[in-house]
Length: 428
Image (cartoon, rainbow, N blue to C red; front, side):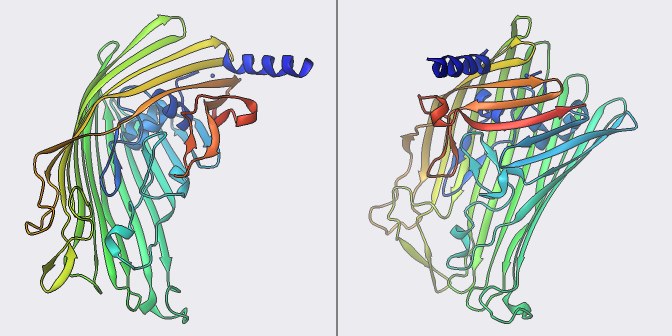
C-alpha cells in the first residue's frame, strides 16, 4: 500500500518549468511543421514556425539574442550553449545535432532533420555509404538597433581504408562533407530568414566503386508577430543526386519544392496558461528518379547505352495541418503541456508515375492518393529547480523499428519508461 501511495505521489508531482526556453521534448509535444516522403524524407524547417522555441535558431539565427546565457542537453542526443558578450552580442556552439544516428533523415517524433545526405544509397548504387559525422553548429548574433544572427554548420567524414588494404593509398579514399549557413533578423515584429546548403558532397575513388553525390538546399521565409497573432511563410528547395560511374552515366536525383503558409494565435487563458492554435497550408512538388509509384519497380530504360531506372515519380502533396497546444504553469516549479497535431488534409496527386511509355502497366497520370498523414496527441512537463529546467515528453521510451522513441502509445507508467524524451537546460 505504501509503495502505491509513493508511486501515486511521485506521478502527481510530475503531472502537476519557465516555458520561454525549450527542448526536443517540448517540440515533440507541442508539434512542428509537416515532413514529406518520397524515396527520401524531407522536412520544412528545424524548429517551429508557429510558436517560439529555442530550436528555432536553426532556421533564424537572430533568435540567439533571445536565448543568451543558456545551455541545453538533450539526453543521448545533442546539446550546446549560447553566451552573451559585451551586452549587445552573443555567440553559441551546438554539437551532434540529431544525435548522429541517422544523418540526413527526419525524426518522425519531432520533424527535426539531421545534417547530411538522406538515404545516400539510393544514388550511389552498390558503392560504400559514408555519412558525415559529428556535426558542429556555430552561431553569432547581435542587437544593434535590430536583432541579427548568422549560423554556420559543418560535418565531415573521411575513409582511406575502404576497399584497399594499403592505408597510404589515396586511390581508395571516400569522403563526405556538409556545409550549411543561415542568416536572420528581427525588426518591429518582422522576422525574415534565409538558409543555404552548399559544397555538400560525397566522393568515392575506391576501385570498382567510383561514384559521386551532391546535396543542395535553399530556405527562405518570414514570421510576423502582430499582438497574439503570428502569420508565416516559407519556401524550401531540396535536391539530392548522385552518379555511380560503374553502372550508369545518368545522374539520379530527387527534388522537393516545398511552400508553406499559415497563422497561429496565442491566447492567454489565465496567468501562466497559454492556448496556441495553428492552421497551415503546404504544397510539395516532387520529381523523384528513385520512386516506383504505380509503375513496375524493376522497369528500366536505356540512356546512352546504359540501363537506368525508368520508374520516375512526379507528384504534388497538399497538406493542411491543424495544431493546438496548451502550456500551463501548474506551480512555480512545474509546467505541464499537451499538444495535438492532425493533418486535416494530406493528399498526393501523381502527374507521371513512370517515364517509360512502353512499360506495363502504362504510365498513370492525374492519379490521386490520400496519405495517412500525422495524428498525434501528446503530453509532457518541465520541472524547475531554480535556473535548472528538466523537460520531458511522456511515452514509451523503447525504440521503435525506426530508432525513434515511441510517444504515441496509450499506456504510461514507471514500468514502461515514463519519459521517452528528456533534456536539461540551465539559464544564468
